[in-house]
Image 1 (cartoon, rainbow, N blue to C red):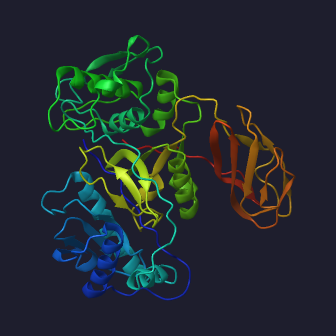
Image 2: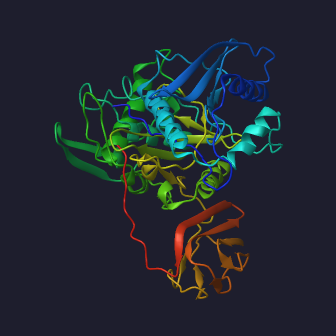
Image 3: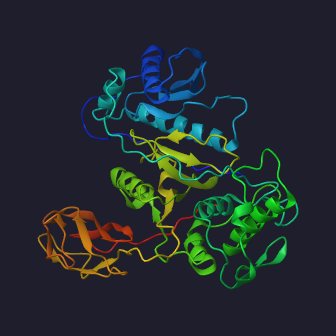
Length: 460
């Protein structure tokens, strides 16, 4: 089943001004400015406007352009202005993949919540003003999409899976990231498990040579039997590696099984690990994602609203901090979208967003790691950190949120004092002549409190 993660909006909760509805004309001016800036097209004529509503409340607008592309704009100024866009793809409300439909429905739920709760717009109003006045960020920092594949879950990708079943979004996301690296040449060992419908399924990774050269970026325009088998082998092996439950209406697996599968069966670096949005502030989450993409590493991303989920690939971002997602649906809806944190009443989908980071083949680049001697200091207490990085780093950059000092470039930093209660993130970036790596421990130091319980989450 092609399930969709729900994209979450970045909303300001700070006290200040209350939200105001955004008129169609105001939204159009914002959309036109945004479209002109990112498309560089002279024709900005709007061919159609779609207004989305939730229980009679306007939630967002979709402006569709004659020259190709669209811009999705919030209908309330307590949400960030631009929710998604494309400078080339069309937007057909009657022909949207199920993942995109679920995505848009999440916008409805979240913006309705913002309006009903009368949340502050003291931060987001600045973003609206900038777009209204054509004040775009001067930063050129961006990463173009790292993955060129436009893969899917049905034929030919599923031809080695049980008959008429889908590959599963987890396997498709894994496979697209692995294709970016064209790695490994050969896997490691074997694995068998019992599927509840199809019985024992086995993959012999160690006896398989993955035919990367014959895997096409897209299979929409035809392919040879060899090219089909090449991608189908990879897809099936990815599914077996995570104990995929196969089905004719959808196949599912747990995202938390992906790091171990990549490491144990495909010989990826042991740095691969899963992170949960619930453990991060929105700015720290965005910083982590950008750090991965800056390093050239696509991110495996997943999410669920409790009834539907989807695993996909985050593989780029633009200067406005919108991220590019490859949904694993033959390229449909592979565009730029906003991401952040919000927990609408009665819907905890954002707590189930997760990302698998540091997915890379083994190399001599450094691997950052560290540990604290006390993660629950009293207010005013100090914490000592031990550097456990490997592969001979030559430079170190520590960041201690809420700590004094707040940074250090020493291999072993001085004792860090925490004077205010709360949860604080610690990060370490290490570098040598072969590369850079960053280790982030979110909500790691709990000042004045007791250790927090870690709860695993999953998406199928």
